[in-house]
Amino acid sequence: MTTAATSGTSTLTLALVAGFAGSGKSEAGKLLAAATGWAMLDKDTLTRPMTERLLRALDGDPDDRHSATYLEHARPLEYECLMKAAWENLECGISAVLVAPFLSEASDARWTSRVMRRCRRLGARFEMLWVDSDVESMHERLISRNASRDTWKLSHWPAYTAGIDLGLRPVVTHHLIDNRLTSARPLAEQVEAVAQRLLGVA
Image 1 (tube, rainbow, N blue to C red):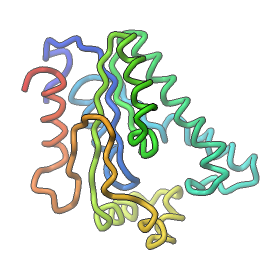
Image 2 (tube, one colour; image 1 turned 180 degrees about the vertical axis):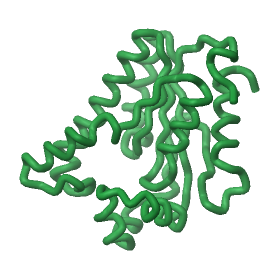
Image 3 (cartoon, rainbow, N blue to C red; image 1 turned 135 degrees about the vertical axis):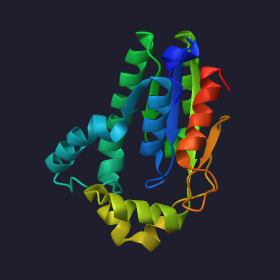
Image 4 (cartoon, rainbow, N blue to C red; image 1 turned 45 degrees about the horizontal axis):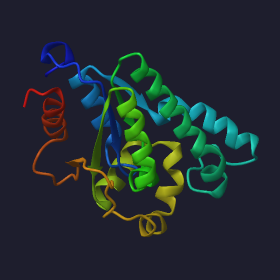
């Protein structure tokens, strides 16, 4: 596996790994961080305790990830924390891999433009990986990981899947990862190929 230390590259990079719940983006992010040696920042890891406590304080369900309470009060703070951690790493000259759905952000040209401008000011490049999957593959992964935050999705699967657009893609140029269970290429192989391109060794 190629690492930043052996690649000879020093390009400061902010890499976003995005996709729907159960697409496999956390695994892809870990693979990318391991292959590049960049910092790994997962939204759930960074913010879950805060989110759960906030939702309880608002008399809500700590596993809620779909209601107006979560979307209006918790979600903005989650992404604010994630992005602040990313900017601190970049300011210290450390590239970062950010893992989160980024569903609204990836499709928002104004949001991506702001992030890209700040990256340029820091001398960093902006990269996005979109982890693509299908309903059957995501369903199987959510069942397998058995996370309480997925309870509503799994209990209301037809309603949940009716409300998502699997054709969604980032508005910026991105690296597409096919993580369907029927994919012809393993996830690790696809991420390694992207890592080598980003490190300039492909």
